[in-house]
Amino acid sequence: MSAPEPVRACDVRPEDVVTAACALGPLAQRADDDERWERAAWPTRWSAASSVSHVADALLFYAGLVATRATGPRPPLREGRPAAPAEQLADVAGAAAVLAAALRDLGDGRAWHPSGSADAGGWAGMAVTEVLVHGRDTALALDVWIDLPADVCARTVRRVFPWAATALETSSPADVLLAVTGRTDVEGIDHDPDWWWQSEPLEHWDGEPRRRSRPPHWH
Image 1 (tube, rainbow, N blue to C red):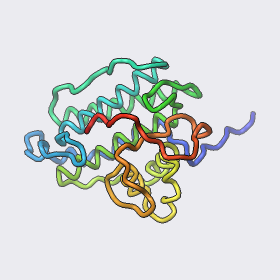
Image 2 (image 1 turned 30 degrees about the vertical axis):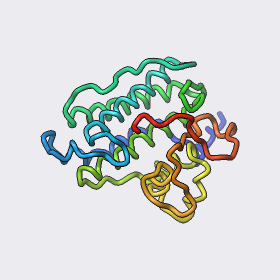
Image 3 (image 1 turned 90 degrees about the vertical axis):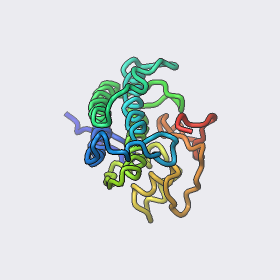
Image 4 (image 1 turned 180 degrees about the vertical axis):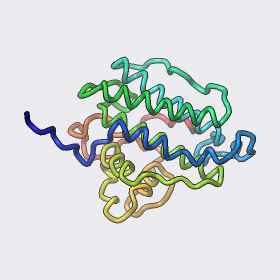
């Protein structure tokens, strides 16, 4: 029996989505009735509570597309379910586990996303971005500190933001991920409000930064 091929440094793994969701644990330090949940989660227009709800929505949306091997748009499985922040955080954890399972089942397959026909690594990278970037937005609004897992951030940058990967040589992976999504400054990375993911396999990347053709949902 031949040995399995090693995982490439640019591969984002299904379990990385679960790890990212676990990183949001400190957000639970704020009680559901803490007024800080109503603060804006900059740079979005959402409140901190709505930002967490969006993460759960996004992960389940992804899971539905992956599980059905979507070839085009599908309605979301949930969108803005009314619930207290603690329940929304629990939903994020559950949705991350569901998506990770769907990605393992996807194997070498692909499924439609607005940014392209994504493989498992692309899906995982997009999901990690959703969780950690919006999680950090929320943490700032709540005056809470969360640690963004460096190895997961590095894999995510290399896989879905490959044009920013050289910045990993001089800056922390968390800072690079936040910079490429417009949250902080890192030398050599431009703030592009139309940033987008390289969700298709890297062999299809044209070498240029990806840019979306319409504003993000949170504008």
